[in-house]
Length: 184
Image 1: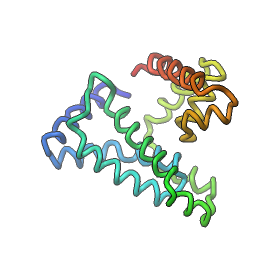
Image 2: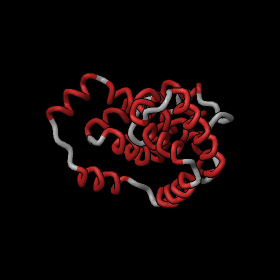
Image 3: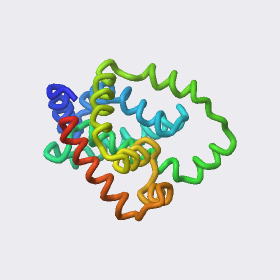
Image 4: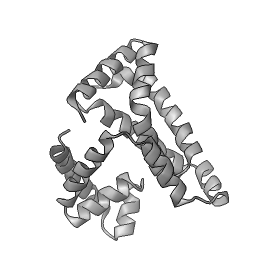
C-alpha cells in the first residue's frame, strides 16, 4: 500500500475516534470498494457482503480508538475486521440455511468482484502472488485455506490430515514471511 495513503487513513481513523463524521465518510469512500470485494470473494453473495460490510463499518466507527498504527497498517486492521466478520457470518446458522436454498454462479462473483476492484489492486495482487510462491507448499496451502476459504485451524488440519499445531505454525511463519515480502 502506498505510504501516503496509509498515513491518510491513519489520520482519518484518529479523527473518527474523536467522532468526526466527515472523516468517516471519507474513509468509507476510500476503502469500501476494496473491503466489499474482499467480503464478496469470501461470502460469494452480494447481499451478504453488503450486510457484513455495513456491520464492519459500524465496528470501525465504534472501535476506531482501539486502532494502533504501530501494530498494523489501517487497511490491514480493517481487512481483518471484514475477514473475521465474514467467517462469523459463514459459520452462522442463517448462512447455512440460505446456502441450502440458493445457488451461486461463479461467473456472477467474478463480474461483481472485478467491477469493484481499484487499479492499484492488480500490482498488490501480483506482489502477493510472487510472495506466496516463495512459501513451502504446506504454508501456502494453509494460508490459502485460512484467508481465502475462511477455514479455521482445526478445519485446515482435518482437510490436510495434519496436527492443528503444525497448521498454526505454518500459518504463523507464512504470515511473517508475507509481511516482510509484501512490505507491511
